[in-house]
Length: 494
Image 1 (cartoon, helix red, strand yellow):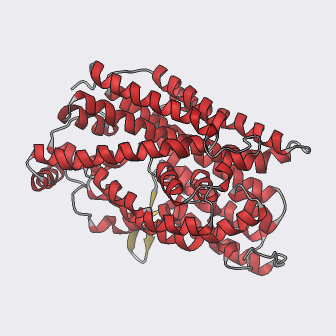
Image 2 (image 1 turned 90 degrees about the vertical axis):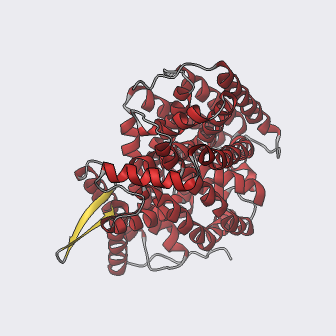
Image 3 (image 1 turned 90 degrees about the horizontal axis):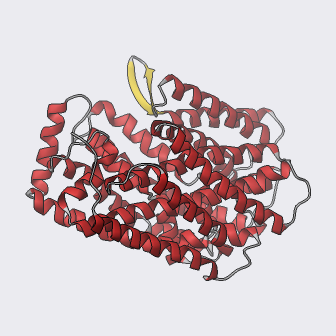
């Protein structure tokens, strides 16, 4: 069947109206919690003044993205229970945030660190290893931004508009208000975005099953669909999938807050207590994610047939909801792309400006630093846009999976150094290098798939490649650190 959807003027009008609302909010944000935006900590971290409520929306806004809303139901639609690995991953991550991130926030606040690479440089000195950490963050983030574009592209196509022009217009607007308002823009827009997404999901999980004969029929239809499909699909996880499922959840949880955008959201909090409170309350988004994932089963029960699984959610809404709600839902998902894309570009710009630019330019000022970050944020956004326009979408998806493997390799340098003095720069650098090389090699050998079949004692254990590479990273880091001089003690902030 054709996936071409006719343009509905009502849906399009509602979509444009909410998009314009967000644009106004983004430009107004420069006046909100007013600060000197010629300073990088004001532009790139919002002045480190976001309290519990703002931080809750901001972290949720950049952690639960448009691609999440599109991709998780699409994966569940395609493979069933295996697609729910995102749920335990988001459950595991918050105890980690509660335990680790307040400690990191204290050190970063005391020493004016703006990026994770700043922290590494403050702990270990030098420029090249912090530069490697910064480069890892930037490269891992680029395809992540591109995937937000994919999410937006899918919902715009669901409204009947094809081509890249609407995407270009949306990201030009995003680029302008991010340049003007910095982190304040996505922080303010996150309020609108999250409220809209909650409305969409609550309405969907309440109304769609009632139109399909209830949840019993939804699960029965999904069960029958996967039994007919065969293979490693089903609404119950297969025993052969247990280790892959568990390792993907654990690895993804450890990697989640190593990304520049999540790190930026944490460091913009007003206090360590704010970070802890958010770790307590953020699991509310996990409930939301579980409900979003169920849309995949609902699409099966509704008889949705699409050429690409990513089109499932727009197709489901288009079939079962009135035009005005389709426009509202499309706007909510599109705005869910703008918030994380803005924070990701700011996080990448902060890394470049603080940790790579000084390798090229010796003399700089705080004003020049902020100006450079603003310009780099534009370059990053348009780099991601070119990625989508000129390369097949699959490249962005594959590279984002590889980005998860890469970003996990900075975990020892950031987290372990908060708790032990045993590691030194040679150990951490060689561990990072071993993890990057091994993880990249294994991923390429698997066709850029995230799981590798490990054979031990006659048994096969499919495991997340990022976790295997991290294990090698940790072993190398500790072994090399044991046989080389221990780093000088640096007094931590209390």
